[in-house]
Image (cartoon, rainbow, N blue to C red; front, top):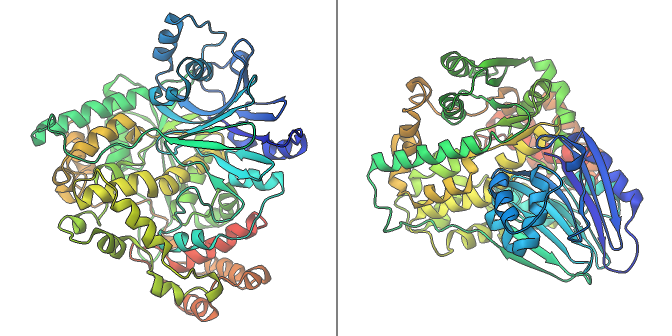
Length: 590
């Protein structure tokens, strides 16, 4: 829901209306239903609106509460806003709108920075205090809603996308070598606060920041669940199954809060299928569901329509199938690159981009199944960590695209750090307290770090490129807190997600559960050949790429000669990975 941007000055100067207007134009696709800008002393907050809750002008943003002296720019949805409003009304607060934005303002006034602990939902917001000049910035527990920041000693600018900040100007666009190392280690994930360029950082998830008028700031991490067994939760397998199903029912129901219809992105996998099943169970009729498929390549099938059709028929949904021919896939790549706030290599970026384009013609809000693998142990590397005596080394073996030594063969010396920052980062996270087992530690790392800047960011970027809001019930924080208590053995059953699959058996046909695990298949991009090879080669041999000089010529020559021989341990194309980075940099004129 929406896009935000703005500028906070620390030097007494006025924010730049020109820069903010350029940023607003850049985030316009996120909010096609309206725009607003409020400037007051040292702060300017701007907003592009996607109307979903309280469609009236009373809920327009930035929202100003003159009585409380607060202004907010907010992106997201607070699902429990009706309950919070009732609580705040009991404390004497009066409301002039009926949506969730005003509830955030009143909640902040009533409870201060602790208000975020009460919010159930996804959010990125900036609040400006009129009387003190103080600014408060917050991001939801999983970073479902993005927030990028460019800071200098004199000012801070923020925006819902990195390219929007670039449009505002005055950004250091040099590439961050540490971020590059992460990108090449973690299949394009660059954990916060870094981004691929030095001049832009991103607000970490589950964090609230208070910025004083002189620019000094303090961060508070407000959510960090333990991945430990709770003595009060010594349950049988069936009891865990039932607890998961109950929590998932609540999570799905919460995400139906809207003043417009809500649909579902239906891949045909267990995760999206159980969302459809639970909505049908709750009485949703004529539910819109959407699936996308592509041409096959190298004998690899490019769709999973057999399973999405099965679910759509079983629950009698209003189903829409989108088949993308190879020509349309190629034509859509420039738009996909433009929609990326950061370079992302997953093949399904273009799938979500094209799917969202079609879905946005019918509906404004969808639920989607991201996060289930990271929360319930669905990936193939978790069983390999079950008996680990060295979780850091073992995780790196099964997860990293390349180790530090191999990276030295791929990038030129000037771009290689003198240490292994990616292994250091993973080591810090895996060795943190409050994880009982190596699998618990890996699940925490994947759900709180890797998830944020891969599937979560991908879905936000590609849906919001078309003014479509995606809600992710598997990232309901109460569901995740429950899942963190579950013994890993319950999750690793049935080749992963065992406890979730058992819950799903009570809701959906077994055919979508007892199938080989599927991924969003876009085989043309996995096997980079024909026009896709030409596209990537042209980018990597261009003058811009040669001037950058990131990758060794001998490495690129090997990739060009036999792209299909260079597949990462997680089945990604090395050529697509390095080519995508250059294509993204050129798309955004970096």
